[in-house]
Image 1 (tube, rainbow, N blue to C red):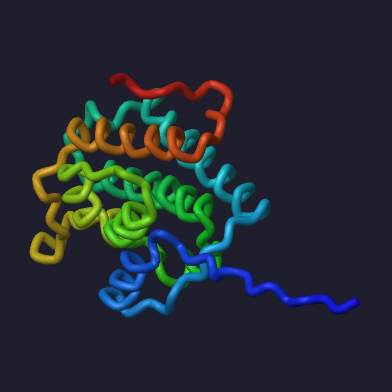
Image 2 (image 1 turned 180 degrees about the vertical axis):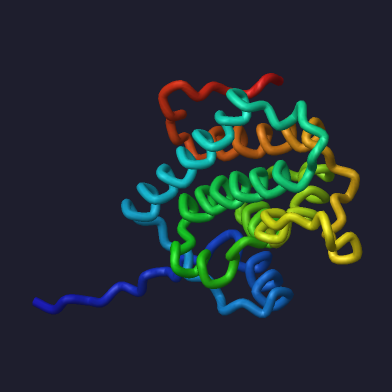
Length: 187
């Protein structure tokens, strides 16, 4: 009795072309996409972290403030957590995200959309560029007028619905349950 070997077809990602273009554009090493239980678990944790942090804006509404810097820093953190949750869910490694995405919200959004996220909101894309890297919004620029990053015209009242829609989109496409006490934002 002989055993014949069967050639297994190579499974390629439907996103390989789009990802190759982004890897080249950002000069990133290629990401290996492999969904795992661990990745899904970390994804849920990051999504919950984004939801819980964003729900604090309902307790202390920064959209009523006229100060954009703290709102942009806060929004950057929430967007980074939410977008990395999506990337982890589709199979990006947490280490790859930490090394290549870092605090670049525009880059995270580009990778997510290239992998089927489907959040093609022009205002969110513009906000993502303003947020990137979001650490810059954590500093006080009172005495450094010439070094102050540009807000792109975003104010807390315009940031709030964009971030809420992004976090809701992550919930919708990952299927992660919302943390206790967190609800979908107003439509």
